Length: 400
Image (cartoon, rainbow, N blue to C red; front, side):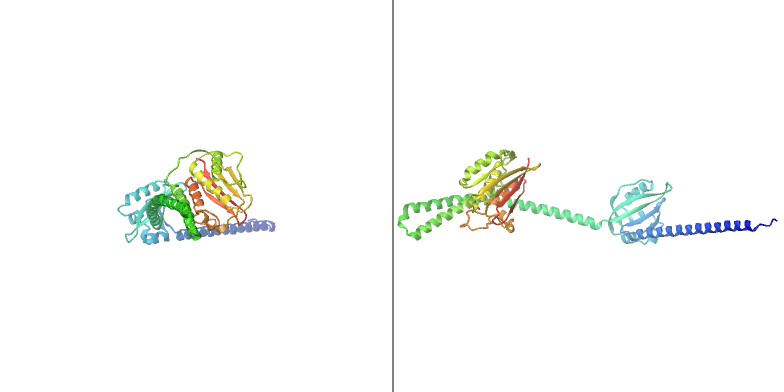
């Protein structure tokens, strides 16, 4: 046997140390991989355990091999009772067994099936509404089993049922309100219509008294008759406005082409605003599809309000019209007394007045008519204003 030299021994020692280092490194990597795999396993186990849904896995023979805490809580069986058994035998029930078996067969044939609503049964026999989702499990392209996820939708179904019941009840109440509203509208129209005859008689007889017996009455008597006549005239004006308000929605007006230029010219001539009132119209107003009756009600009330509630020596009113694509947007701008923003909602309600009859004449129905007429045509109305800063009443009308 040949004796190795010192140099040869040193080389072999270096090789041996390298080999030992490589073995130690390999062992460290192997242990690291084991630790990582264990960490993944524990993480996956924690996810399954804490999942709110019931998760059950089965092998290719449809025997349960794993279940989570959610499955125990939902169905009342322990995992020990489920593992090794056909899960459909335990939870499907007689009425759902064939359905459950067909579903499981499709999944175990390797097919992805759609989620479905069904019923399963707890250990105590009580039913539970569930959403079932199933998916096959492949390892190296080989089908080894399937996973089923059951979501408890009992509360969801109950809420859906309650919402449906509430919707039906709400629809019924809406029908009742519509019927009552229609009856009230007809009643308002009938009463208002019937009131006009005695009011006209009251006005006429007041005038007869003034003409035939005025010289026989003292000043107090004359004041009484004048007060009767003025209040009767105000009452007639109120009744006329009520008839206008009740007519909106009760009678469907015809929709046709309306030349806004001609319409506004006619309205202004009827209103007699006075020589000191300046009304500025756009140079060219469009012909639009709409209800001429409603448009006349809208513009008549907005224009008359614009110069009525105006204390300036030269009231100025501007009508604007913009094409906004699907809608027309109109505005009536004035330099009048303005409105405090806190009253914006109030002014569109019927019989709501911000001033006394002595300060400004009117019935408090005009803007309610405007709002109702605009909404009847599918539009919206709003106002921008401030005290002593004038007002801008804007509204939209959809293009028909």
